[in-house]
Image (cartoon, rainbow, N blue to C red; front, side, top):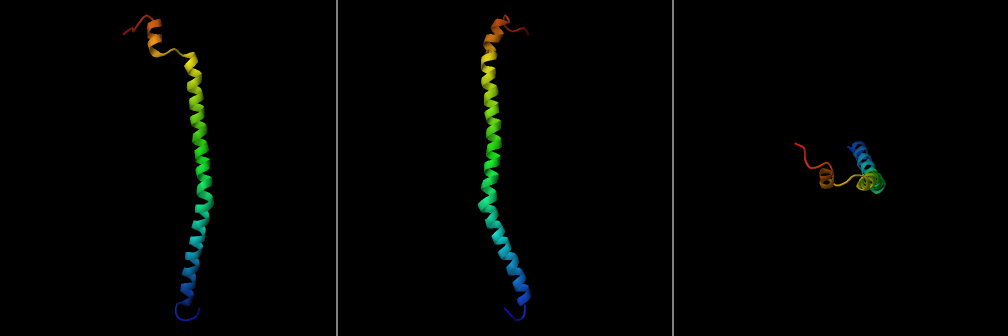
Length: 75
């Protein structure tokens, strides 16, 4: 294009198009990858917490049984 202000319009248009393309690429690729990574981190942490709780279930008596085994409460 030519005429008054054509250089500034070209600069603004380049910035706008670059921003739109960048936003689209980030939305299509980065956001899903980021979601999967964060989900897997929390899933592993939750899995480990459940495994620890399951391991402790067999080794530790419930609080009521522990109190009766000790002869009741000692306040």
